[in-house]
Length: 330
Image (tube, rainbow, N blue to C red; front, side, top):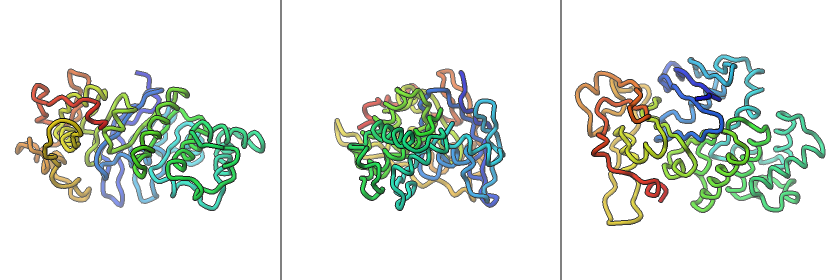
């Protein structure tokens, strides 16, 4: 397939402690890709590393190619031509990403000046257009308001407007609905899907919410302890999750219809990066683990059905219960 972004063997260590262990990932032009997993699995770190946004104590190796350009180790000047213009990122907490003492219109205009060299009346007109595009009511009047005069959902819309200012090829949405109520979450998801249809930009949606991923993504990668453990088309992976961790994520979803049943939580927590098990990182929590799992780490291998899987003892497809998209979205 055509590749907009190609990540190969991406590794990150903080103060000598590895937290990403060789991520291989492609994003095609116009594609909607989901990254799911528990907090601490490395979803956000993957893209912060790709854009050179990690602190100086982080050691990043591997390759991140955007077209013909290499981002890992690129000088700051080169990265600044990519951030916002080619690849934009929206964060899960707009209240910390927006400046509370600068009017929102000025913040959007600054992005337009940096990425499209728009100034004055032209920048203001485009900023108002972007505010209207993301659903801010009465945008001309609210152009000069501060962030505290907007609701949480509207602040997230403003963040999306700033991200769109550079007309990016790829939008990275880092858990953009986490702090919002259910109604506003649905509106933000629909907005992201609509903007992708209208602009043709690719989207990477980082989330622990399988329902949100089912709603807007075409392909999904499941991450655990700094590695991708399963990846494939959303419909196929949701119908038959093969990795025990992926299966565990689905088992933990409460059913809103049918008979009541106990949730089946995944025991334990994501391991400390400083004390990873010698074999499969999920083995201490896995109900299907064998002795071999504690000795050797399984490679991420292509499967006959088109997915990739890193498990020596996956859930047999014939026994894997079918999980509908509707169940994940309830």
